Figure 1 (tube, helix red, strand yellow):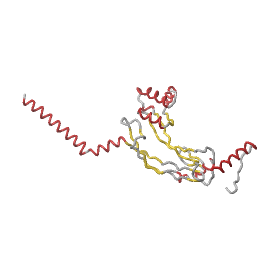
Figure 2 (cartoon, helix red, strand yellow; figure 1 turned 180 degrees about the vertical axis):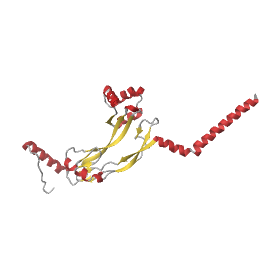
Figure 3 (cartoon, one colour; figure 1 turned 120 degrees about the horizontal axis):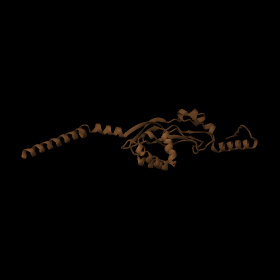
Figure 4 (cartoon, one colour; figure 1 turned 180 degrees about the horizontal axis):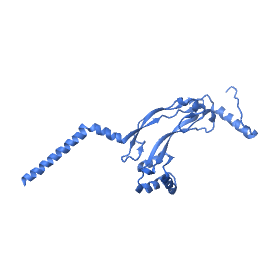
Length: 243
């Protein structure tokens, strides 16, 4: 009996020694390597372009063109497990204010994306559904609508300035390229950009102040609009003396 106990005890000691040696190898010898390897699976980087510069009227108080961040949720049905499909659609249809039947039909045909608010994005992130992705995108915004629109120009879907100030000073207004770090959830489903680990290195484009006066421009365009309504003109010009 004693020698059997001794053999068992010896095997137990050897087993413990092997485990400790293995832990020492993994945590001490190769600790930094596996730490970096794990970090590489949790964090990834996207190349991003800095915000496009703003355009202002004379004085720099009234904006003509600005760039704002908006959040897009993208649903990829191929990435959703069949047993979770109905649950995912039910939750998203309610939070996105979409009819469940309509959303389900759309997803059966292909992917779906829509702009959402910060609050909605946080609610979606908390659920951590597979096949549901959140992305921050930059969008050009014109606060004055059509006021001085022919002078300002516009930006196309590729972010390139077209006509007017947007086109002529496109390279000046464009932001520089940088890297955006994102962290992945434990299951790898959802890319998070709300975590404090996010690191963004990018350069904003230059801001342009025009010599155009807001009040003069407003009244000039108002006068042309009234003339069009009164005399049904096709076009007109306004000359401002000593502006």
